Image: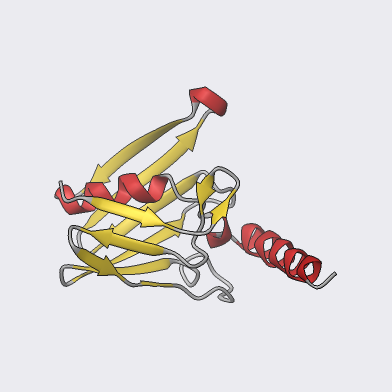
Length: 136
């Protein structure tokens, strides 16, 4: 598996997509997303690694179910539990390689709540209130 790391602005106990950096091996990877898109597919995180295009998107209205998709491969991630009992289940559809699994494992630990419509609204208001608090 390639050495994969994610750094982002901390939100709670997890790094968020805000000012995020992802690296796979020695390569820094650019993350793209449309914050204002109306659909989950439109808000998906787009990643290009080693000439492959990935999409990381929410597959349910809640923030627990995600999928990492590239041409011919889909890795579905379902997180459940709370506190010390938090777990993740991976379902692989297609022929996934080490890079696919490394990306899925790293992104599982990232706060991607704003890939859902409700999470995007909460993140917007949360950041706005923090921004206003700076000027007092």
